[in-house]
Image (cartoon, rainbow, N blue to C red):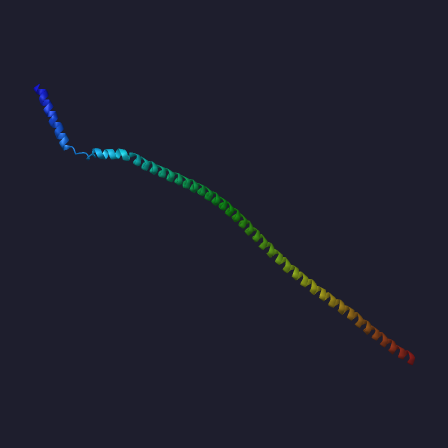
Length: 168
């Protein structure tokens, strides 16, 4: 029994040292504070409930904003894709226009060269026509002059021959 008594004393001392060394917990409210807390619990619950409802409303609002933002982002991406497609079409059209413009420039240059050649041909034709008209006019004049000269020569021969013939 002595052993059990000594064991009990040692245990009591050990627990005493342990409780003395352990830090004290916070001071608990008194009985009246607990009763006030019990009566204030519905108010606290209603406050918590209102905070919960406010948080739930805020969360719903944020979800709605998130959905609107997501829809706006999708619309923006669709619009951006449409604009990129339009830009690609415009780029292709501008490339086609550039090629067509180059073809038209080349065609214009060939037409201008052809026009110059036609002008030169026309000038050449006009100068040949003028030369031909001048030559024909000179030939006609030479014909009339040669006729006159021949008539004059014939007239003189007949006149001189007629005088000789009469005088003989």
